[in-house]
Length: 154
Image (cartoon, rainbow, N blue to C red; front, side, top):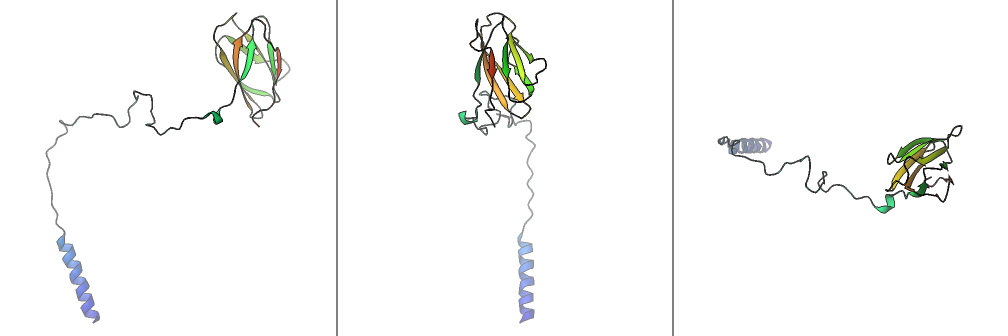
């Protein structure tokens, strides 16, 4: 019985191996006739979406709300932070800022031109990792000349 099953399995293996046909199809070279209608990864999309709809929009729950700050040409505004200032970024050349002498946690901000028309921004990162952002506009007489910030992020 064992020999019969082995012979049957061998016959089935040979039959299925011979059942496959090798067919080769030759096609003429048509590379000169093909034209691309749209690039797969275009460098610039018409709508500006370089990620082809795979990006998620940022919601307002991810936004760090900016603080309002008024500056003037004739007076210096001082902003006091709870930790040493590590980084300051000014949004336009209409502002000048720097650390106060002898205090690593105080920055002074001033307008470089009188009556600059557009609102600009300023961002500050402190040593403890806190991030502060400000919308800065020109005012002839700023309401606050000395501002003490609290740690809002942590």
